[in-house]
Image (tube, rainbow, N blue to C red; front, side, top):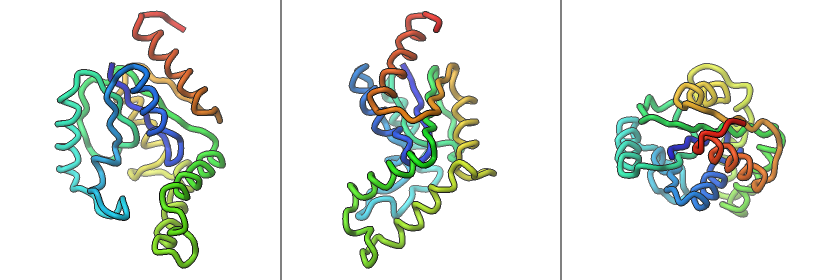
Length: 184
């Protein structure tokens, strides 16, 4: 089983992938771990495009089954065959609410006015707010969606606000039905 789970910042790709991976006993890889070098605070220094592609190829090549979460659409990466794709696309307001909660949990008061990450967080949220409307080659809804559909043999799109448990249940059914040959 190979699955690509993608969507905008705050869509729940990482959390969903971790739960699905645990349920099916499949290793999970998050695209951010291949994009950003480990720094404190995180997400300060990217790997080069070549480093990203090489690191991802090594990790995925070491496992016959895997789940990859996040966006790799702009990396110019050649993935092995990916039978299953999931595109998480909750309403923008809900996605941004979740993103705000995540950033608060991750960084606490450091994102408050006067905090050392305030301006960086403000810029990040502003960038993330344009995900749905973005166009062109950068990371945005249309780029992520087109990549997923182009890479995966069979795709599930979840375009409504569901709880994490509901999303996991839909993906579980999708994967179980497709793997057993059943049709919806």
